[in-house]
Length: 247
Image 1 (cartoon, rainbow, N blue to C red):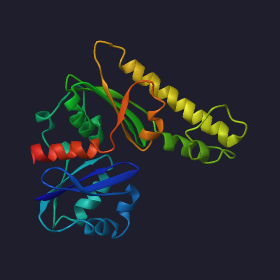
Image 2: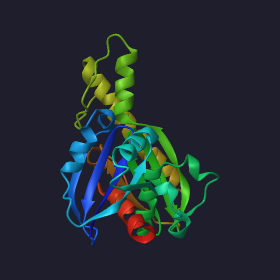
Image 3: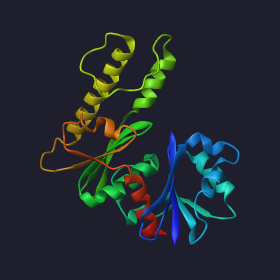
């Protein structure tokens, strides 16, 4: 049987159709705000085959109202669940004071990251997050401002600074406003990312696998001074793993 899972983020949502071997058959990415448009989510689901389809759908979600909208739309057809409604203690020990404060996407990333025993997952989303799995236990993380959000907020909060699209090549400080902004964001986030990684992995006795995911993962891959891998499917695979083991 095929099944549907999804990841609802603050900026974008990804919904996937997988087969019984957890292979992604179809993947659709769209702006999360579109979920609230009349008829939009029905059009998305029409793109998935209705044959051999499980009735249970599992989401990781950090936008509760978006999940509520999907539940109400398909309440007669599907049983839609969010991963925090499941007994995740069976899959990973979470060593923080309150799991309510931990985003579902960060939990499933860490569940998938457990296969490395020790890993650091850097997710370039609306926020830039750093999550630490040590000895297969989730130990906590770091949250920094997201790159696109920072660019947007700076532009909206100033009269003369424009929106920019980052260019990876930045050999010198800027001779005009756009190049100066690009230098600030590229060099600034390069320093931020490397500094946070260094702070986290100060204990040299533990070798962390560093995994990058999200929008700017490939952009900053070459600017990180440690060996890293890019995995854009880590969240979906984590949700799939939860689906298979707990549903």
